[in-house]
Amino acid sequence: MIRLPERKARSETKSAIRRTALALDRREQIERLAARPVDVLVVGGGVTGCYTALDAVTRGLTVALVERDDFASGTSSKSSKMVHGGLRYIEQGNLPLVRRSLLERQRFRHNAPHLVQRLPFVFPVLAQDGVFDARIAKAFEGLLWTYDLAGGWRIGRLHQRLSVPEVLARAPRLRAEQLKGGLLYYDSRTDDARLTLTIARTAAHFGATVLNGAACRGLVHEGGRVRGATVEVDGREIEVRAGVVINATGVWSDTLDALSDPGHRPRIRPAKGVHIVVPWTRLPIDGTVTVPIPGRARRATCTRWGDVVVVGTTDTDYDGSLDHVLCTREEMQYLLDGANTAFDAGLAPEDVVGSIAGLRPLVGGKEGATLDMSRDHRISTDAHGLVTVTGGKLTTSRHMGELVVDAALKVLGRRARCRTARLPLLGGAGYDAEATSATGGLGAHLGQRYGTEARFVADLLSEDPFLAEPIVEGTAHLRAEVVYAARCELARTVDDVLSRRTRMRVFARDLSVKAAPEVGRLLQRELGLSDDEVARQVDDYLSGIDLEKTVLMEALS
Image 1 (tube, rainbow, N blue to C red):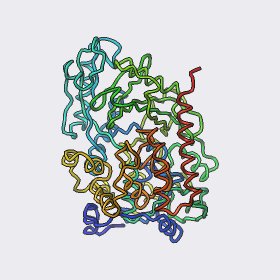
Image 2: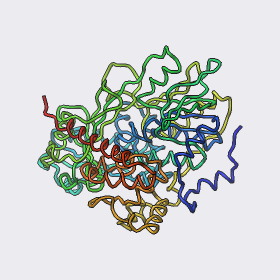
Image 3: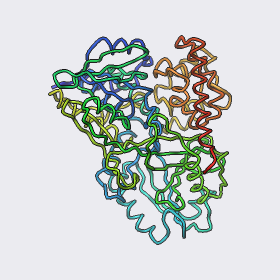
Image 4: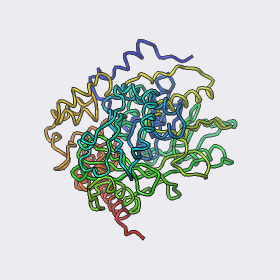
């Protein structure tokens, strides 16, 4: 039996009492990776891999986590950003998944209150062309009662009916001629990339080695078992010995499984999901409004995120490159049509200020629509001891990590109790969401991104007043956030900062282009980058934006 001393475990969960920021030095992490074998090597730095590493290290295991690109750079930064039970799963008859998801939703709200916020969802009831009309609204309300009883009540609010004026107060540009009222319930949302990063940093706080830009190039076999992996990081090849290797690479998991077992048969069916971002002034709403997509079975959601609204998502089969996934003109138009059918907004392609395109790692056969496929996870251990986790969703990532470590412990022949159910993530312990929101301004901006760790970012402002200025005029993000990302969040590149540490690429794409050179200069100062390297990073970022916009605006065939 492996145990953390109880007194130490309790004190270490009080992450808010730390007096200095958790600095993550890249060279130090690389040397730790090279210097010692570990009990558990996790390959894949998405939300599931990061929670797996956190679960394992808090059970007393030695842990290393390696990610080929950047934390959350795959699916985990391109999700719907909802932490929810999933009404659709009730419709599919998967009540156990809903119950589990609603329990985990509440755990996220307790463990990461700075990153997971309650969000109202409105379903307009229309005489025709709605998500549902008045004839079936009563049946849908029964579904909402099931949702409340399955665990939705934990959020502190039950669903309710809305009158026409109440619906229009939340969505004034809804086409009112067919509006009969609405239904309101509550779920949660999160910045998925920052949540994933915070889980990785919490794992590092407890002693795990975590590294981005560290690609698994092969597996180490010994005596017919997988006993580690060869990792390439910053031009250096490191053989990492491990008692058990965990494959948490999402849509790429078939590739790693085949390195363990050449006879492995692919089982991942990627499903493409796309969101577009428009200014809130063009689509003024409060919370989330669910609208129909003309001629399609799927509903779309329009969610306010500060001064923008995120509209999505699609759900289609995908057979292109797993590494280069972009929103197309056709997909953008599909979502614009849905929004314009429901709202008197007149949204056009020129209104789109950002887009998100990612792949869900669904597990199953090739028959049927991806929309109807289960979001349940699957965990397997092959004949060589490689543990693989696939499927699932962001909301249940903590529970998935727990079950994956249970499987890994069986390979190791050990036992240890899970500690993550009530474990605050960094910045979560002692955070008061309502008090922080009430402060407004800089306090709210930093608090809702860093929680109680915001004071460490604020400390940088005292260190250097230059860092108190915005990265670029027009954004709330400060130069200090770039410095903090380099010192404490393992940011290596301009793209790391703008795509995942600040999310400017998603929510303010054109502004991020203006910010790129300044981000490069700040990273150069912190990381000692050469002029050529900074220029390359800025050029790569701008080229990526150009490609994204070109594909988005290509004429429909």
